[in-house]
Length: 449
RNA sequence: GGCCCUAUCGUCUAACGGUUAGGACACAUGCUUUUCAAGCAUGGAACCCGGGUUCGAUUCCCGGUAGGGUCACCA
Image (cartoon, rainbow, N blue to C red; front, top):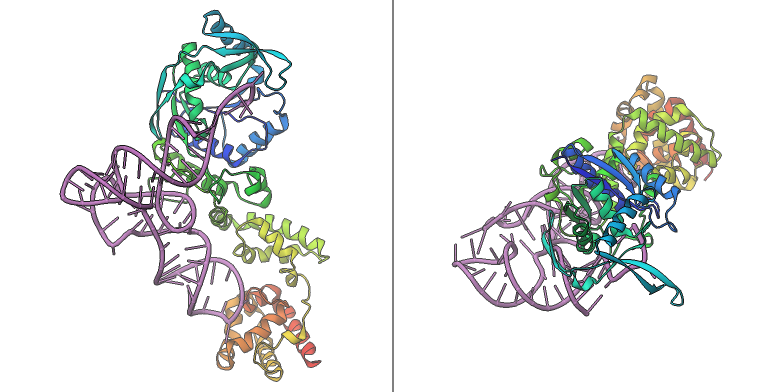
């Protein structure tokens, strides 16, 4: 069987994570079976559909790493719908009725309705099993406003038939649309595709995910600095578990393991914490030069706004350290804007009263700083090539005098921050000269207390 | 409200009649370079309720309850 699936978004809004998930599931299934993917822009609502939204959708799906083989717009296919509607009317399976407009009761409009035979429709859903509907309650539902102006259900059915769609994989919000579409299908004499309705994902309170309850646009995740493979991996595993039990999977691995029947039946909450965990993973997996390039761009912009002189080399050497401190790029920007990295590029501004820590006296603090300074002065220059060797230079002393008492003033002197990376890492990054200079500055500041 | 779907830790889930109900995220505690982050170790935490079926139900059936979806001249 030559499998053909479709991505049928309507370009009436920015690419939603729900749209992305629909595409991911269809993509995995199609690629697994060597099938064909059709992107179909469902833009029959002329009022709300825009080119901008369509581009946002294609752009973001591509960013995620997805692709398709054929592309159509429903707005360019009115002739095909016209023929189908005409045929239905000619065969007496549909009719034109004059009715009051629902928008304005004083206006009479023509609506084309399907003559509903009122049968019971049972279809097999790959994810849920058999589902039965009594279609009598649907009545003669509307399929078009005019022969050249189809409504959603008609367009979908005609297109699925014309494009040879074999598998319709969509959200469960379409379950109740299915009997209606099957009725049209049967009236047109079209084959019935395989249906698979997956559950929608939900907001934290288990209600429908909406703009009010968090980000729903793929572009906003992208702007915050989420990585495409992370979002892709999360979206795929939200409501689907790989048989291997793996949670981290590349696109190729997902394709290899994917089966429609393994998609869960119940709705899952979209959890940003878990997404962050995925993103941290993929951020760590980035080659260091790639990480540094992006990291530098963010630091440069953030530090520029703080009037800190830029030093590309210093920033690059910082990359291994910033990498383990963030889950999303946005965090690096926030940290840099809060001044957490200033000390790598400029002398720290010390609050002398903060140099002695806790119960340690000022006199002892001075003594410790003087001692540490001696050790670090005596240490040969290449000691600074490795944080471990810097540590070794003062470790015995810190052990006997009290690590906190010795290390806190050192760390604070070097960074001027309450919270920062450890002192040896910092000394390594800023080098011997700056390290000694900063200790001297701290000693000078504390002597004025 | 009618119709349809669903129901395991806070969250994502494993289990396919017999298990100390497993894992991941999050959380708590401890360790590590008495800060922060990361890492490592440990810990707390779940079968919606009621009936059946069965030697035995988280698992199968029915009912209830709860949640979701859908009831357009939108898609």
